[in-house]
Amino acid sequence: IARCGRRPRRSFSARSVRRCSRCRGRIGHARIFGRRGSSPRPILRDVPLRTRRDSIRLGKEIAKGLKPGDLVLLSGSLGSGKTFVARAIARALGVGTAMRVTSPTFTLVQEYAIAHGTLLHADLYRLLAGENKSGEEKFEREVCNLGLRERRREGAIVIVEWGDDAISFLGGAPRFKIAFELSEGSRSARVLD
Image (tube, rainbow, N blue to C red; front, side, top):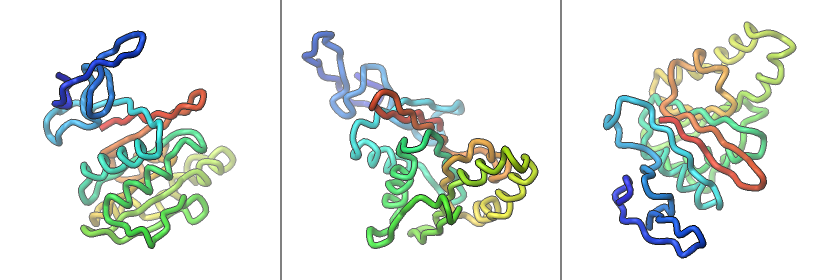
């Protein structure tokens, strides 16, 4: 039995790998996320993103684990699916389909009303591009001027793309850190809880 609680099924491929009937992962995998409070150590999972549905499923699973004041960091190369998963998280938290959830590359931060507060979606790519020219102090000042740390203290859920270098300016450790990887046409996400 796989750690997700499902009974695996036998694959009829040449290698005959046993797979979970729920997520088609190899035997011995765990759920994408552990139960909250079940383990004091970080949980690391590789999640293949073969289809848009896989990305939406990942966004829904992340949204289930969020509470007010949480931070989600998304990192990866351009076009790896960060904004798509951020949109899936926003939809799962209650942002309606009438509201467009787009990349805030030029606006830096977009705010959405959700059932239990506020969701902030930030993209620090432009600030990082200027960091090389203007220095780390200016980068820190610009990130702090966005007010994400203060809004997080007020209970807003914050999703930040390209925020790896700004963790200390964002009010502490993230609840989820997701690194997207592109390799030869396949996509995957590495989730750190």
